[in-house]
Length: 359
Image (cartoon, rainbow, N blue to C red):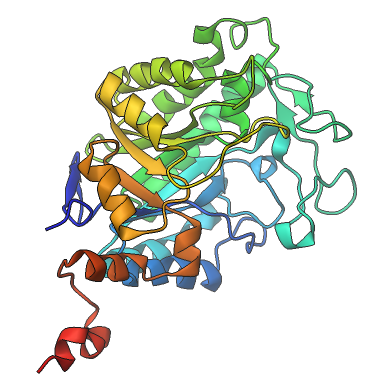
């Protein structure tokens, strides 16, 4: 059996293989509610053979959405449809996870196919919030600087969202602290110019993220894993870098976090990011092997042998597939064929397996 199709046990959750469908926004919700698009999108990837499917960034508050069409988990009414999605994923052999998120200063945007720019006023707009009154791009709305009380309210919002995720039946929760969204905005010196207990020193800048982790842990079952997605570097001089990420990962490990999902960038618009195959794998490798915590590799991983090599070389423990899974919902099934692994197919599809036609 290949490494890619070997199981991985995280607390009481066993993933049947090392392929994770990365959380990818679909911009298809109304008032935060999931619908049949999300059921079919996520359900198809369960049928396609992934071990873990993490639902897109789900906003913990209404103003925490990137766009007006983002999924939400800020009110109890959101849970009913999510239960149906989770049930379908589990019935088809995958584990359902959810990413809890707040967009911070990158909120109040239009959907990508309408340009994706921040909406300054009118319908579908709202005032973004951030650690400091600095917009993501010049000319954008100056975000509201959060007070300590407002930060504490947001910590509670993450806690309440985690409780709803538990009620919906998810088995993995991922805290989104990457890509220039709110938690990342706090820990990066490029976006956090505060002088109180949430700014200045490294310990102060990561405080919000640690507060959120502890709040989620207070309601999340001890036997279920917690992931944290981070941007391992801002790719910008004077910003957050990979050594900061190693230090943060050590703190998160001590706090009981189970896996670091190591992405990068997103906090400043002019960063020079050398995107290409495996370009973020060194971050997962460094964190995994210096800190001794499970990591996920993500970013332009598109081939079965490429994914297998990352795992065989001990650079990561899970492979997060994003855009390739949009191109091919059955990437895991096809990867298994390439690597020579036998995998279970849904009963409804078994008659199409190549083995059926062998003489």
